[in-house]
Length: 177
Image 1 (cartoon, helix red, strand yellow):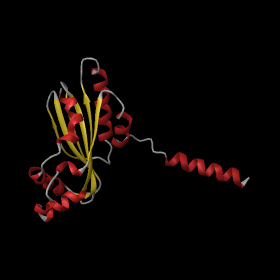
Image 2 (image 1 turned 30 degrees about the vertical axis):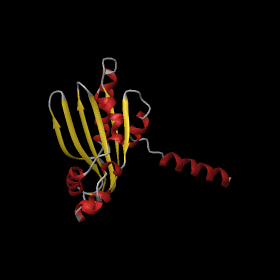
Image 3 (image 1 turned 90 degrees about the horizontal axis):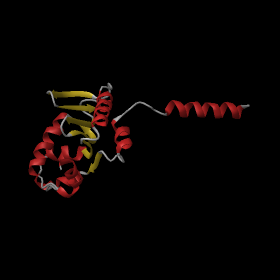
Image 4 (image 1 turned 60 degrees about the vertical axis):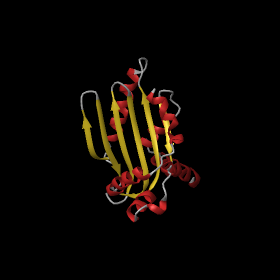
């Protein structure tokens, strides 16, 4: 009898622990094999920067950056309905309260937003989402440890000093064609 209660308890805990809420991570995984998407994982090595020439702030910002995931939907004549559906899915995910919006831009045919996950001084993820009704959309997740908005601004100065390894970005060329 105790065995039945034990199995029931374990099964109940398993069901409770399964989180069915949508998230960007799940969205990336679900669409990684979809032919309408281009998926790219970028490591900090793409920056190809001389770390000895960085300021302390720049070095700290670089250390807080783990990786970047890019998911881009390439719009064409045959997938307009799927484009609208996928845009709606991303919009719904980003409305979740865990994604705190920093900025949003919108015009008739295009829009963009910047959001983050985590407390202000210990941000785990920055999200850049942009869509253009003529081309498609892209979601960029910048993942790291203890990032903050200042880190992102500082990373811009690191980008200016970097010699970006364009080889890692080759899959995005397909999107631009």
